[in-house]
Length: 499
Image (cartoon, rainbow, N blue to C red):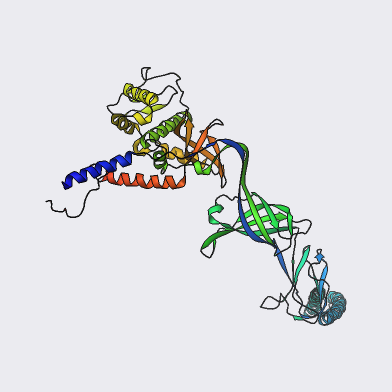
């Protein structure tokens, strides 16, 4: 009695599983539109090059000639340091030079007289050599005096701190009366008097999320907006992507430098900026909603929601891939050729030129008869033998066949932001799985590069129904993998004793 009840429950479960829920989907025509892809980030304006203005002279600041915000040109005087000590050193060097010149003149006269006396043998050779040595020492003293004078003059000139480049004063660190140290004589590097930068070109250091960093390339056009000029966008270009990421609050981001021309001087260091990097854009292209895109993993469950046998869907996709492989390999299509037309025994060639490898024991006539039955009766009326034959015709693993994985990888990486997906399309009133290749994609739509036309209509499945179908499909596969009658789970615990 108990076994009869269990058998009845099994049959009831199978019957309920066979009942199909109402097919609910939204049919959306394939339309043409513009697709613009961008990556947004926040950052701040900063100068490209900042120069710390220091003084080679040390002492008290007696005059500051510029304020922050002043535009300066190369050679313009910025700060003056106390000149009394450098002035005294310069005066002393000038006097030492005069003494050295007089000593050289005197030594040269003595050397000439010594040469005349040595010619008449009036002095000894040693006295003659001593006169020549005194002349050489006088020349050396003159050179030392000239060098000292030049150093003193440079030290005096260094008391006037001048701009090395053209730019804008962005920071002032000293006031009149401040005592500073020399940048060339002190171990600490000296005091920073001012900071200046050339603001004709500025940059924005923005932080881009790691999920978007793969889309960014140096040279990309960028639109920058700042709060000070909300209605005036600025144009720039991506200059550099830093190699090391920064992590804040468990979010990984990469600094991206954007270079901007700032001839009018409107952008100032420290301004907050919103950066929009233009990854790509296309105009008037075929697009489908992103919600209609399916991957190889969820196409089976989506097919069940639509009431289509997943094996049939996989066979449709396999035939489409074989057609694509034929076209990419440059193989000639033979229009109108059927199984009876000089086709190899291990390959079935469809009327539109697609080639399907035949497993051992399957003939081209059997495949042609199968497709004829499917075309006349539809997928829902297939017999168990037809479904078994469909599964045998599918490439191993349900993939694109030999070499298909590598071909798919090349296809996906050959275009910017391109990928391969599967959509369900209404063809002659019936949902049909079609493999497509997408291009640029935004949050809502994706560009369709091949696989669809303007006349197609794609199906959008409700997410709740699809998730439920995925769970049912996974449960069904787990049950069938346990052996026995489909729908009956294999018991792993101890069996109850029968009555």
